[in-house]
Image (cartoon, rainbow, N blue to C red):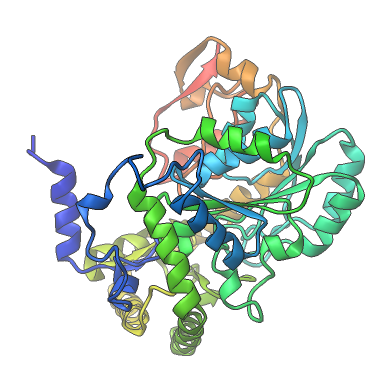
Length: 477
């Protein structure tokens, strides 16, 4: 057994000088190098402190933390902003349990992040599902429509509100201004998981409107994902009078550590300062680099570079190359130290931010070209054949369309979680009641929830997934 396996792995990664097309948004610290005056670069262990005279208190801020959060609120356009040190997950839990009490209904997207379901489970809140649209050409999940929202409000009139994910993992956004107006007309609140959209404010003429500008009542942002903050550092924003501010602060105290990291909070504060000083200029530079990359990729056959509503989220459809997305992801990392955010059977996803430099995109394009050329030179080296690729295409479309085929619910989340369970092999799980959540990560979107009936088609799909390694599944006795 190695003495320091984790540290050795991180040291090995650092030596490879990897290119980051994944979270966090500071991209291996590159963005801090662009601003030498950034106080957290290099890190000072003195800053890893606690609540002592002069450092204030996150859960009862009266001094410097209060002032820092007020600066963040002014920048993002909120009435109040709160620093989150347990990632966006703590903010999601707090949003849900601020507006909904045990037994209340909350309308959510079926393809919500697992933290939304965990929040409903912990709060004993009943989730009611909205179905997003699916792109028939790419198989990618898009956003929910205004029509779907109207229908949901008619179907579940007692729901306390709606929690939407916008943008989603692939960069597709809902029409939040119209949806906010619909919900407020029905006296309902709009909560938005904007984990992947905290950067929208930097290019309001090129991006969808921010959730706050659209009129959302509560918004959670994973600042660390697309902006210059350390991993786990996030924010929750409140605006308007529909939210009980005291209850919200109570929930934040319940769902966050009583020993908050001052390094994380400082990274949020200084991230805001960087955005104020250079954010829009750096975003313009990023968009220029992406457009240049698009022009370069146009000459690479059988590969489509696709963007949704967010031009910084790049999906590379590798369907025609003879290699699966998993194989592309593996080769990019192993051969060229180009690290992507996610892979699925058909392609890879690049999460770009203002922390990326032109050299990063050049390395990505060069790596793709070389792997593409090598694959054609060694036809026998293709990881999948044409017939298999077509099967993967159908499999990927099935995965996305699964959100339109919600499994039969037999028990509530809480009933299933508290029930007696046993582990059984996958093939023995068909028609049993699930005792666990299955959510491939990333992006952490559940394909099965506790209390739902397990179908044969789902088991077949799980057995084919390269990122699902379990041989057994938890079911209710």
